[in-house]
Structure formats: structure tokens, C-alpha cells
Length: 143
Image 1 (cartoon, rainbow, N blue to C red):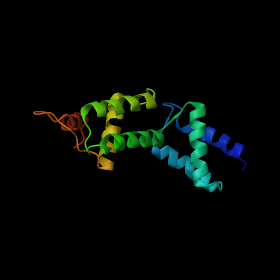
Image 2 (cartoon, rainbow, N blue to C red; image 1 turned 90 degrees about the horizontal axis):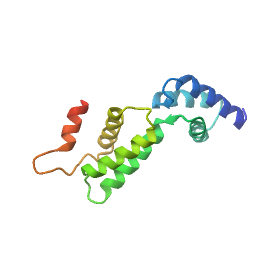
Image 3 (cartoon, rainbow, N blue to C red; image 1 turned 30 degrees about the horizontal axis):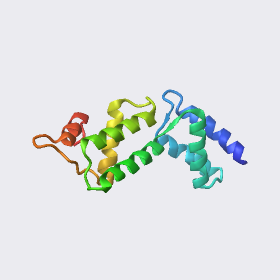
């Protein structure tokens, strides 16, 4: 298949899977990439084409959001090994903007907390009598 035929196929697959919410999660992305592999496309080229098609068609790709959030969490924790509430709120604001209203505020917060837990950057700077991170996890139902 030519490069343009692959992009056309990706566009069709994206429209089938992300029709309702215009959001391609990891499972949907995996399905689309498996189709590309079956067609004999290199995985790196398939990922690049998928990202390009998502941007062109106005779909949000979850792995791009996760990558952006992971980089920002690591940068925030790099200087002192801890993330304070202001840094968390800044990353949350950036993630909300990147998601573009496709996910609720609660879902974006959950995504951010999961990235913090997965990367091991869950040490937070807390106040004298409060632990904002523990309260947030409790509110989100993550324990």
C-alpha cells in the first residue's frame, strides 16, 4: 500500500472508532496499529501517520496526552523530587487544554494521578496539616 492509501485507511478506522467522542484511547490505537502491521507498515511509520491523521481530522490521541503529561510531571519533579499543588494545577491546566473538552475534569485528574503513580513521581509537597494529594486520590477513588 502507498503512503496515501495507509493514511486514508487510518482516517476511516479513526472515524469508526472515535465517532462519538473524537478521542482515540490506547485500546483503539492498538487496534488501528495492528491493522497497519497486518498491511506491512513499519510500526514507527504507522504511529507517525496515525498521529498526523488524528491532528488533521481533529481527534485527540491518548498516548500523545500521556506523553505530554509524563514529560511535565518529570520536569516538575526534577528540581527537588517533589510536586507541589501549584505545579500539579499547572500540569492539569495544560492537560485539560490538550484534551480539548473530550474528557471530563475528573477523568483528566485521574489520568494525571495515574501518570504520577506509574512514573514514581508521587512524592508531593504538602502543608502543615493537609495532604492535598491524598485528599485528591480519595476524592477520585484511587487508593
